[in-house]
Image (cartoon, rainbow, N blue to C red; front, side, top):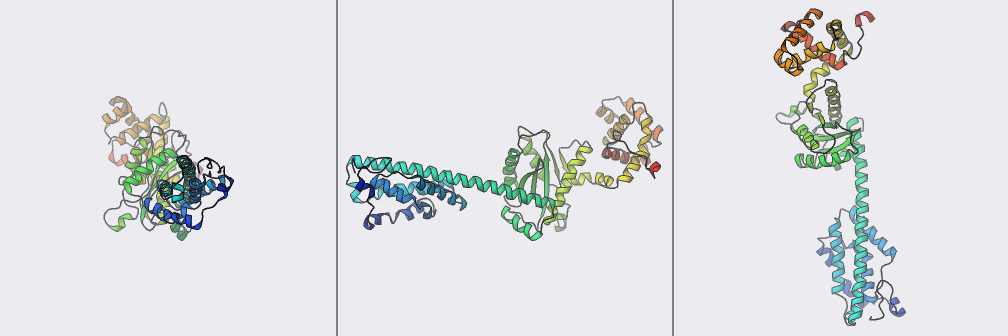
Length: 423
């Protein structure tokens, strides 16, 4: 093939360019696909379709690959990705096929002079280079499409799980590929960034790796919704089976989520709220509502803890459930404090600190950065204005409940009408 072979194009000899290998000459190719498949760990030889003829033409007549042939190889890369074949093993298949084709060339090719052999080798390498690049590109394209498709499917599934209004049998079927067994008890954790993030996807991907390592790759789903990181995880239930009925503790889920998100450069401080564990598909929606209410309640009550458990907010939920009664309580007990110099705000703040510190005036004074005398004076003003004495155990519960209600209602900043006057 000395001067008859033209690297990167067709043969200079028209006759050589159109000559096709005979059936006898093609017999040496019979073992190439199976051998390459074995070398690559069992990748199906069907992904070599279109590639072997290019190798043969390059080795025998020096023909460069055509664009349509390279595009066919790209499609093979896409098919391999869709079939779950790793790109590395697919490339191994192509490399092994090229090596075997070159090693098993028929004797007629080996008898050519040195220049012809060099030209044939260059043509084979060109085919190998372009084919492997096209295969890898096609594989990557299909992989990106699969990821985008999975993200869309995941987002739709999460939305339906959190709403809890989808058809049960359909929901179970859609959740199965993600490893969720909806017959078991799950709980939902919501993470709210303290700072605006350019993209919450980075937080999700970083968290997902840690959560999967900690809780396993089944019954765990990490996604985003309305600017929040959502984690659906199997409840860590211990003890009797009935503990799964919404009574399980959060275990380490809240700590794991908060710890990992706090490592990120942006978003801190994070607040994590965890709903209780509930069984069944609709239990996820219930846990989500509890976690969402936990975030709202923690912000309204100005809670310091970065991890909020639903069970710690049950008292607030009971108070908030009867809004008219709560309005009446706050107005009846605390409204007289508006007569104080400076308004009701400082006195309500003092009461809240006093109760939070276990009714110890010195601890409350330290928290408020006041003298003990100032705190005791304010407590005495509360007694004289409201008729309820913070130092009297019989009055303490009423005052503390009213203070909690004031936080829930954002009083005294927000106006509360007199229910007795409006009735």
